[in-house]
Length: 517
Image (tube, rainbow, N blue to C red; front, side, top):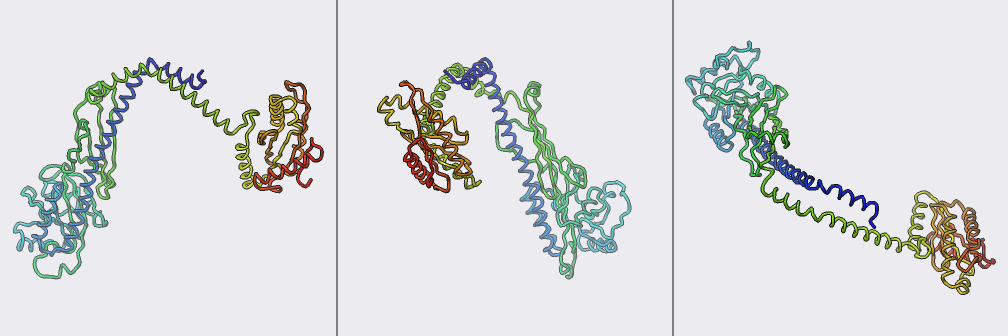
């Protein structure tokens, strides 16, 4: 017969019998959706990782370009061109490198004349609104200007950018001011490029030692410059991710800044989904922040799961196998529950027999030893004393000899029942062997309390016992030992209680005694 718990399990299993196929289908679909979701996360992390690498590389390249400008000769356009060429060749997503020199307003006319004479005949320092036929927002109050003196690559469509004063570029003015106050790169808002396409600029101020301006000859770079990286937004698009068996996902990236509104760098839509997909399947969505110091970016990813990917041939085969396997589930569960029931019963019986006396049901000496160690630990923590009582039935051998061992067993069982009834739940009575019993009294204040309990047990045992041989008179002798006064180990306590018990027997039996009493 199954236990209540196992019967309940079997009934619940049978109750789910009709719905098990649908439940299995749900689990299978949930697992497939979970797998697709994990693949989606992997793909999103990969795409965000590519963008993060490019943004980090932008900062590294700008730092290297700034270091180069600190060391290059003041008129070495050739070296700057070679350096910029190597950078753009190594990092194709960087569209252009530029340098704008800080020039006092009082010196710009002289610089313009010098550069026309010794470098570019048509060089002109000009305002950006003039170039784009827009109106300048207002008169400048600054003492310096920052004309663009170097660009690579020198594209024909961007040639007119030479000499443009950065502070007059509406989307760069604020970023330029921030770069002058910071040692870190500053990103501009996204803007429409003069030659087409959206881009943003990464700026960093560069200060050179005065010794670079002491030589003779043309001075193009000067002592204070602004290094610029021009980055096309579309160049930040990550390449193809590793194949995960998924359809394309929607993803976009927005450049964040505390100084201007977020700007969408790029957005790549996925294939349109069907209405059953949108109605019954989830749309996965993730947002990943790229914590770049100068170009913090938020990437958004979305994917509409599709039935055609979930219900593959393998999934349909698994559904069929589940339907076949489910026929044998109830029988297997019943067999398993019966096996568990037998195992639990055997385990409980083995554990009980290992720690209890088979005849009386009392704890045996092994369990009693464990209880003794617990009492010792309680004494160490709380200082609680305890007592050990050794109880021996008087003239028990005569009962066995006269009436037989079966009657003797009846007497032992009755004596055990009486002693168990008289002690507290925190105390322990155990069969020590033969007709001897041992009692552990927890939290005993003094020897008088232990002796009082001993007398109580003596009176309980001494009442006539009803057996198959009739009423039999029964008495016992009890020896008492107190921890730690009469011993600090189980053997020492038992020896002290044994000596006290023999004192009780020597005094005429049916008595309670203590060592030294």
